[in-house]
Each structure stands twice: as structure tokens, then as C-alpha cells.
Amino acid sequence: MKLYLVQHGEACAKEINPDRPLTDQGKADIERLAAFFKQAGIQVERVIHSGKLRAEQTAERLAKVTASGMELETSGLINPNDNPKAFDWQSESWNRDTLIVGHLPFMAKLVSHLITEDENRLIIAFQPGSAICLEHNDDAHWQINWMIRPELLN
Image: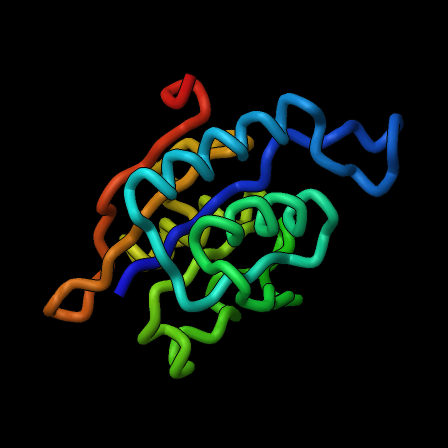
């Protein structure tokens, strides 16, 4: 089982637009990430986002190539300052490849929690438009499969 964790693309400053939609750069970065996902043949059975506009716009673009026709899900447990331990890891959904689009610092803490069981021991450096693939291995532990950042997709 794989989790694809994505930080939303670059968003407008709150002062410019309080809804914080993706900027043109953010849209371009996510389109390149979507092309990478498509070329890699990545398919998921669930796409979950925080409900914030920038995460929803990112999830919509990625879902077109990873989960065509699938309805996006919103979770109130993956906002920027939410506790990753509160996310329901025991649900049946974790038996299916899943794409989650969220925010910092939550996404970085989630990776740390899954890999090291210590959310405060940050082990990766997300930036807007970054994606990491975690895989649940045979001994029921998570491991990092790969990570990609926007500058690598140019």
C-alpha cells in the first residue's frame, strides 16, 4: 500500500486573496507534478484534501491523472496545525493507495510520525508542490519510497 503525500502548490498571499488560490507558478508546478504522476503510471483509490482552496485545486489537478472520475474527499484532520496522530490510521482506507494533499507543518509531521513515530523529528523538507511516496512494507512499517520537488520537474 502506498501513500502519496503532497504539499499544495504555491498559493497567493493572504493579503492579495484571503481564499489563497494557487498562483500561476503553483498551477504550473502541479501540472508538471501531474505529468510526472501520469508518466509513472501512479493510480490511487482515494484522494483526500484539507478543504482549503489551494489544497482542493492541487488535488483536483492530480486526481485527473491518478484517480479519473473519482470523487475527492475532504478531511478536517489535515489542516496546517493539526496533530498527525489524530488522523485515523486504523481505518480500512489505509489498505488502498491514497493521495493526500495538505499543508505544512502537518505534512512534514505526518511523514515523521509514520516513519519515526516522532512527529517532531522532521526528516524531510517539503516545499509547495512537493510529493513524497511512502510504502507500507511487509513488516507493517512505513518507508520512504521516493520524493520529488518542483525544481526537479523542470
